[in-house]
Length: 210
Image 1 (cartoon, rainbow, N blue to C red):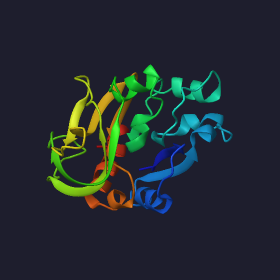
Image 2: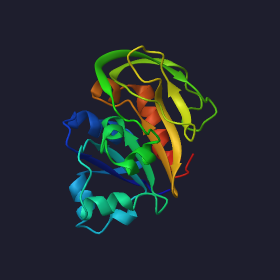
Image 3: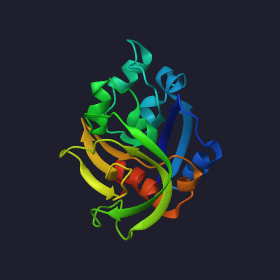
Image 4: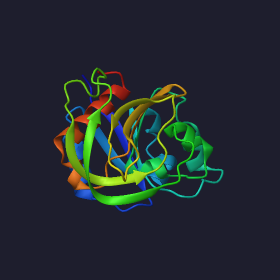
């Protein structure tokens, strides 16, 4: 079976480069291409339509003006390319209704706490992303913000007092499956075997392989 052609899209936020690379290298089913949002939009190699999955790990704060970036994002969901919105990308484009609709959270105002010890609970143990997993502990940055609405399927939660309740959720946006994960700050969580399993399976679920 061919590998899952995956764009990992960054920008406007520092991140643990070796840790993020190691996370995606740990998924044998994936070929990933790390790129900033502007290069994704410019699509100099004319490959954007060939990606099976788009992983957003960017933190742009301004709603894009008319042009390449805006047009590229407005095209999300027109085909069936899966969309993974990872960690701080949930907070991107805070004034843009499109991004709120994509993520399934209408009020994305937030606070954050670094280095939190989290107990992770499984909401739907029969979901393909979670099958066979048990609750676990991990260290990560948390967001204090609203949870996704009723049109999302909750997958992972926490009872940590300084975190939104929902850690991961799945939804549909136009023609595309969407998987959102609040976790993913640095290598403390990138290297966690349960987190790696969730991300690997999430990508496979986005393209209907599990």
